[in-house]
Image (cartoon, rainbow, N blue to C red; front, side, top):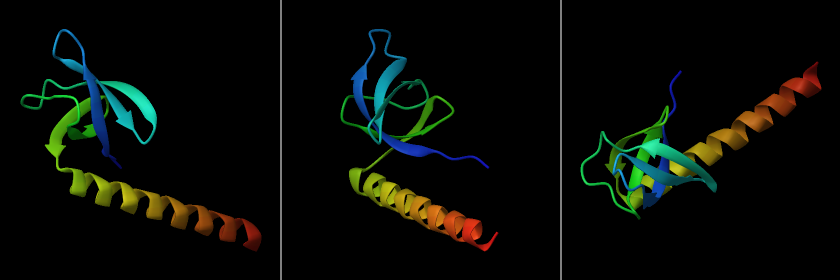
Length: 85
């Protein structure tokens, strides 16, 4: 399964091909060569070290909220499975 996560560009490196991205509080350097005119403040979808596309802030918030909800549900399900064993 592949998972791409929204992150916000915080800085572009001098070469213009790499950027620092905030992924839910974690900082990651990603390749931004696949997107047009990346700049600090842009929201991007990140997968395997690459920013694949830009997205608007509302779509990023919705996606992050859904990811948090899925994580909570998975944790609850895992705890329930452990109790049954």
